Length: 425
Picture 1 (spheres, rainbow, N blue to C red):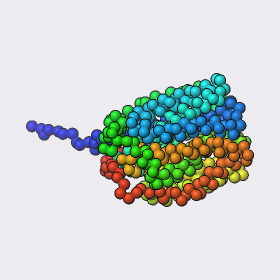
Picture 2: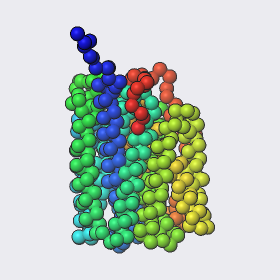
Picture 3: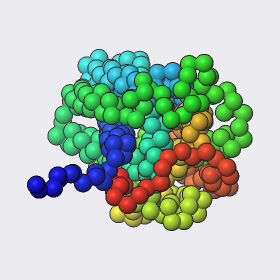
Picture 4: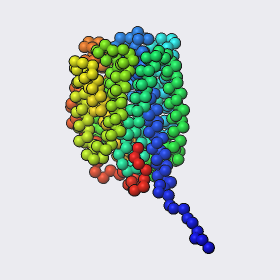
């Protein structure tokens, strides 16, 4: 009788497969969210021209998106706690889709500033809710994998913005109508998100973390009010605020600033924005290696210093090639602050949704103050020179970097990574 043959044990157990599937799904939603947001940013010059706005008026219009984002941050902790990350991401992406369609109609059909403002508010609110939901899910996946991958999730977001910038530059170059461009992107983002959220880890437990008793029952509160009283959480939020301002100023203004200050075309301005987000993608993809080797604090010191130098060069450089190099340094320097801040907020799994919500709320205040501040400065000193407000804020923010160090005794769940586990994202 021949011996009974048995199958060798699988190298990757079922839970690990689920984590890998969730990792891929979360990264994809990050990328789609970046694509949606960058699609609007890449067509900001077209919106300014189509609506006949000055820099100051454009800054006020951009404020509508920031207001929507701030409102989302205030409510996101409770929404994610009650509905769960998958449902929140699906519903908020639907709202982004509606917002993009309204913006397209407001620019390309009716030339209506109020309609565009409503659309931007919807994009801001939807993107803000999505941001908190996917950061909470990403922090859970990061802990389950046992390695630093949060910046790579944000690199996926940046990759989405690179794609959005490229599509925007190409659409502007060949004359694709804004409405057609935004409609196609909106549908792709919606369908891709609805498909991806089914693989989130929390999708298996109706949105709640089955491993985490603190968030497992409806009787527990979201903990947001308590998180607002925690000094470390607020200081992390303040650091994220400055980093978000650094990143958001480029998103909103770098294309317009180079068009005005360096006398380039609309398509070239969108390409400059593409350089910034491409540099951010590189920084977030490779930054995980540096973070695992040297830790959060020294790496953030180095990258924020790089951003200070980059913005200064981008504004003051006497030639366009040198200025573009400054934009690249700006993107590299701004790449890690936001994802590291989210990881720091989620160090304790039990309190992650509340703390991520608070840090995001404080951080997104930058998007409330940033667009009008740069716009009004631009009316007086020129849009390009107004960008110097970024290094002015970054220098004192360096003192906040040590608060991102993980607190002693923090409960960080998740198995260590063993040989045979899948490669990191």
